Each structure stands twice: as structure tokens, then as C-alpha cells.
Length: 294
Image 1 (spheres, helix red, strand yellow):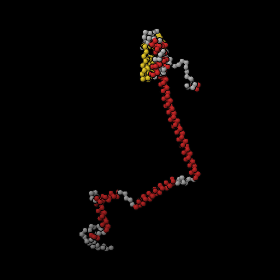
Image 2 (cartoon, one colour):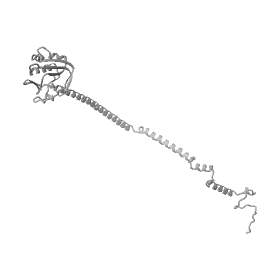
Image 3 (cartoon, rainbow, N blue to C red):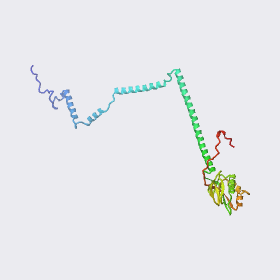
Image 4 (cartoon, rainbow, N blue to C red):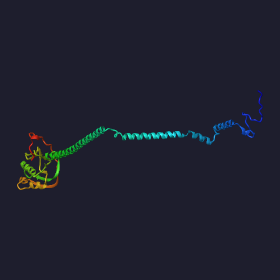
């Protein structure tokens, strides 16, 4: 087949057409696209891209919400809302859906539980009241026991004591005061209500006694010498007159040549103590057979 003659002025697809050529505007679109690709490749070269191109690449990394995704999100929200409404409706209708017999049984169970709780509450209140009463009684008993122990300790001579009372000083003359005379002084003080008595540092109790050993006075196996200093706790207005009555204990002391002086005070101290002795013969009476207290 003879070769077709191509005019020299027709541009070849593989040749570049000068910009001032009359055929520059007739460049094929495919070549224009290839030229655009070459330009884009130039932009991808480091240092040759533009800021607008970089911003476009960063925007590609950000997530975009299209229409389908928006529709799916709305449907999910609607489905969740419907589920919540259905759950709440089921909870509110749980009792209404029960039969009458079931409701009656449920009500009976609640009533029985309430009654059981009321009984437990009442029992706990009773227990609390008993504990409080027992605690108060126990404290009162402890206080009473302490008070009684203190009283018994003073009366038995086991504890020292202080309070209003009198001080009696007897000083012998030319002769010794007899033991019986001194014992009468003790009895006079007791009869006048003395609660604690001592003489020359010896505590006098219910079992105390006086004796003479030659010319010396002995009190509960303890020798004492003149002057004899008595300390008695009690009502001074009762003790002092009781000692000074005519023909009484002090009158007998003075009749034996001794002197006696009584001084009242709002506070005196009986410091002497002694351990009480256990009784040899007496024993407590059982509570069941004890007589009525008088």
C-alpha cells in the first residue's frame, strides 16, 4: 500500500508543538492531560509543592461524615431510644401483668416480712432497755459497794478518816490513870456518836481494850504514856458536852489527879489504821433465814 503523504505542517502526536505554532491550539486532549500529569508530578517533588497542595493532603486525613453515615447514626440513636422505652415499659408493666393470685401472694409475703421486721425491732428495743437498765443497776451496785466498803473500812479501823470532832488531852499527875477510867472515856465517846477514835497513834475499834502493866498503860498490846491525846470524829456539839457531864468520864480522870482539856474543831484527822481480825466464832446468817431488818 503506498505511503500516505503527510504534510509537513501537520503536527505529530509525539512531537512538541511550539507555543507560537498555528497548531498549538489544536493539541489533542490526551496530550493536555499528559501535560497536566507532568505538572502534578512536579508538585510532588519536595520543595516544589505549593501550600495549597499541602492543606489539601491534610484535609484528606480528617474523617468526613457523608450522608450514609449520618443516616446510620440517626437509626442507631432511634433504636437505642426505643430499647430504653421498652425496658421501662416492661418494668412498669411487670406487676400489672401478674395474676390476682400472684399479687395476693406477693402482698402476703411483703406483709409477713414487715411483721417479722416489726417483731425483730421490738425484741431489739427490749434488749436495749434491759442492757441500759442492767448497766445502770450495775453502776449503782458498784457505787453502793464502794460506799459500803469505805464505811466499813472507817468503822473497822482499816481506813484513815477525817471530819469534825474533838481533841482530848489527858495528862497524868502524881498517879497513873487507871485502865478502867480510860476505857470509860472510850465508851463515853462511842455513846456520843464517835465514828473513829485513836489515842497516841493507836486506832481504837470494837475489840480494843486497856490494861496496866506496872505503872504503864497498855492499849491493844501497845504501851502508851502520858500525855494521852485522844482524837474522835463526830459531832463536836455532842461529843464535848458528853465528856464534860458531871460525874462522867472526865470527872473520874480529874479525880485521879490528872488534867483533861477538850477542844472542838471542824476538821480533825484519825490517821492510825489497823487490819480487822477475822471473827473466831461468829459467821454470817444465810440470806434465806435472815431476820427482818429493823
